[in-house]
Length: 76
Image (cartoon, rainbow, N blue to C red):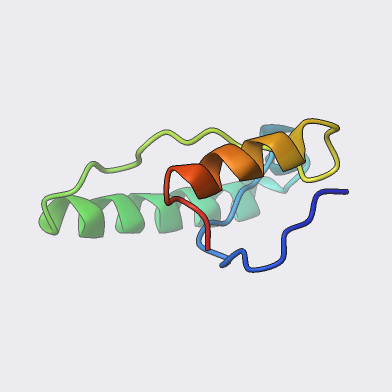
């Protein structure tokens, strides 16, 4: 497991596979929340939903990715 000491929790990630297991009503609620967040971001002149790369901390290369992020000032 990667050393995530000092990492701020900035994002929430949901797997599509896990969302697929939700009820229709739960999916509708999630969709409504996503739409509201997107509208808020657009009103702040940001992209609705930017794309991110996600690295699982249990991957063998996670520590290397963390070191790269630290070198570029994107950690913490």
